[in-house]
Length: 524
Image (tube, rainbow, N blue to C red; front, side, top):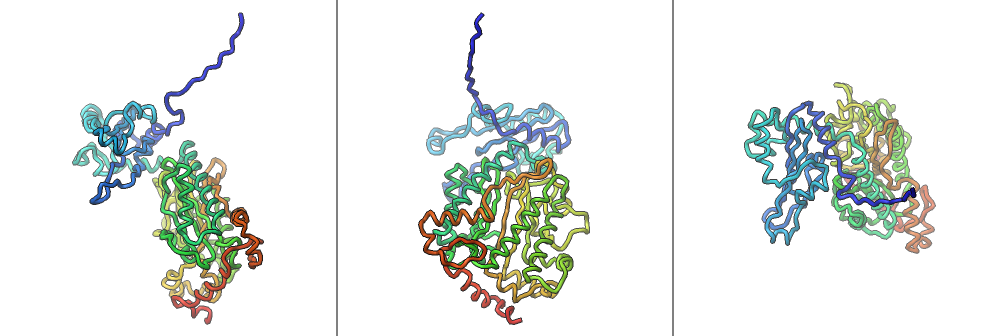
């Protein structure tokens, strides 16, 4: 009998790689620690600007998304813990006129195909279902907040609990599964492309707005239409403000740009910061010295990431490297590294935590904070108001599947230095004002990557260029414009590259000695 070779092409009726909503729902139930109960979550509703017929830009509630994978407005979900049954409720299309103007969301049939759910219905059915469930089943209904009860006043029922669900979802979200990691990696890929495009064109730009526009253009063109946070495009001393978002000033003769920008991909964030010269070379030895020190801080801290490591200890490591570096540069003096560490004086230059969790939020949730310490053992280099999980007390050790940022920085904020540190003898005795005055125009340097904790160490999910590769891209972008020869005579402070803006390291240094009382430092 002849054997026939038959090739079959099977086309799936639904996506094979759905967001794992059921897996997440089961994990949340485990954190709740109950065998019976009903989880109810409303998604984000359609909203309008005040006194306007224009929509507020839609952003899905992240707790809802984690249990549904649905990025559509006006939806609801229920999850029966005992029967392991996840139901999505979608809005009715409304009038034909409404559909003409705004389109419609998924129908129940379409939702079943698109999402990892067991059933779908229209949203008018959710209230009746919750009330029916309560009449027929034991266990509580779990909601996030009292104002998210399925009907007003329902939160007053003894069987409606609004104190446990949020902590349970927070605990589930802190360790990412492979699908979530894939989305964070994709967001980083697009953000890296946007950072590269900025570097390629930076010598042609004249202001911060052009940097923001180029970054946004690259992301939107790659179908990443939402940023995980407002873009920080801070030139010169604007970089000493951690969350500078005006992005509207000209470069003039400023030496550096701190660009903190990352897009979302399917609701998952990236968070990437790069600092680079606004010329094709380092504009001063002070700027290069601070950049190299921050890069050393980040490299050492990333290498310390592994399961079982305490993130607070890695934060301490960043401060110890900073202190040693600033002692070598002469900015710190009159004390040992331990004395300066114990005084907390390094907070003058690194006021924020080393990093935070990353996921559905840029500062993602955690059932417990990221930086752990026993009561009474927190060093002065931890400012509770400036640190987010995991850089706070009582956070457990790092675990496989966590995604954290590592973002050391050094900042020269005139106001903070004068108001808090130079006016306080506990700190001022360790700060050499004359040397510090030379570094003020640097403004601020921050370098940030997104790090996945693996079973035996870490994986860096961020591919945006830094260090020598970053400089190479700036230089090559300059050469592509055909202008490199014009600037070949500009002095070099650590790179053979050429720049576009002359005198970057001259005028600002004279100017910096004239403001906010700092002119007296060089005379001390």
